[in-house]
Length: 130
Image 1 (cartoon, rainbow, N blue to C red):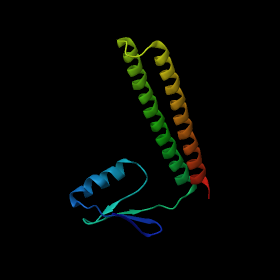
Image 2: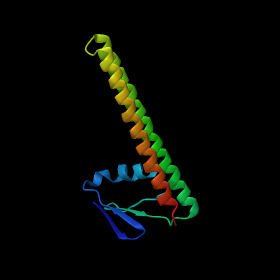
Image 3: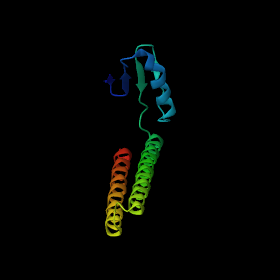
Image 4: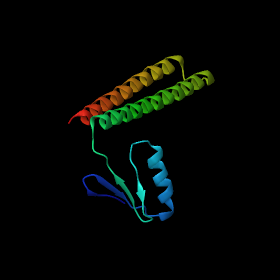
């Protein structure tokens, strides 16, 4: 379970205590600037105050997450194009249908990347707002 007992504290209480170390390790590896403290039953995450420097770091994290999303979208586009090409090569799909599918795919990808850009821009504004 996750709770927020204080404004600058998040408390995690895993249902399975054997997962304490992996959870703590994942938090550390995420490089979010959080220092979890584990007492064997719960993990406490004290939240540092949002200084100008910390806000800029969080903006970098948001941008990286946005870029990771765009990479995933491009990979999905590549896989879909390969599938369309394969179906066309096998004769299951005609040239017109394949071209239409490619065009629709590009529209979906363009919409997805624009959505990611919009979300990241809004999140940057939210983070930098004092």
